[in-house]
Length: 219
Image 1 (cartoon, rainbow, N blue to C red):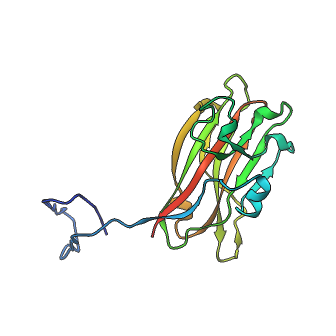
Image 2 (cartoon, helix red, strand yellow):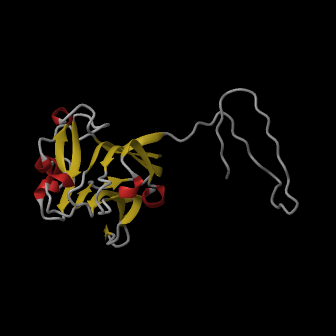
Image 3 (spheres, rainbow, N blue to C red):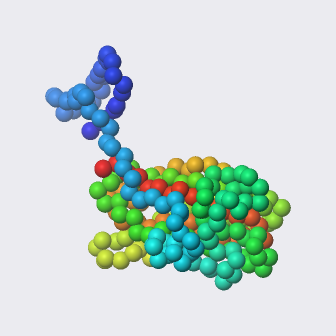
């Protein structure tokens, strides 16, 4: 079934019959239809978390400090403590950051994992968040920034052992300051998922910061 939506007013519908077309004995047109409503499935602006302990206990987030150096792990910071206004553009009040510049010895493998996000009953699922990545162009380390998704397998009643990378940035892409909109439909539609922000292979470089995470869907 093909659907389209347009503004109010007079419209002309033209049909062209293909030479080999079949089953064209009937078709239907619906007037006054509205596009499916987009609803918020999950959101977190990280306000109200005093530290990463409350982020885990109250928010259900997980932090994996793969480098073993806590100074470069994902942590809660406040925009009021920026070294200069706009240094972490797009971040409001509390935000999360993994900063490889905090330890010269560490090679990052820092993961921030969301709580379970229940997208059952939703389609065209999307992720929206404030994104701030600063790469060190003078270092050879790739400084990988990945958004991964993990799907709950209803049949086995457990999380998949695999994470799928949805978006990837690295040093050659240049710095990023944006309100990112990412389609998760291929993985999340009708399913339960977790999201992971993984900052890895950075050493004595810069940071990845994020804020105002929101997942929406039609349903």
